[in-house]
Length: 154
Picture 1 (cartoon, rainbow, N blue to C red):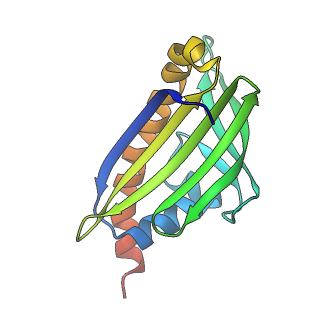
Picture 2 (cartoon, rainbow, N blue to C red):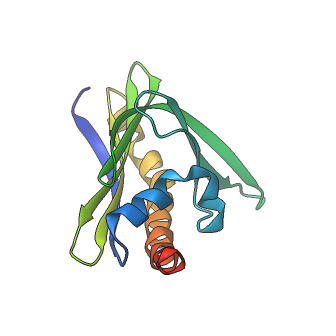
């Protein structure tokens, strides 16, 4: 992959251990319970297809969803999930969830990186599109994870 031309990142400390946050992040079918910022469809096994589905609000107020079909590259349970979307031979987007233990909880980092010849030309529009989505998703996850931990505590 060529050098990263832009990156959109959000991270937050989460008051839940990495195993709890990992379980929440990889249960794509449950995203609707705790976030409206995006949807993901697929299976967390190395190699399968994954769809990153982002809602966008049109000028008339209606919501349209666009889907980016990607391929999982890295699955490190309780640590990292990485997948890439090749939009053309000139533009690749790489999505990541990273978890770093912090004692009583963890740091959740969600990023979108763009690379390829077109990445510098579409940096502005893609940053405007993904910035709010990534920030809201991380905020929703940080808010939801402690309540999930409490629900599953013995």
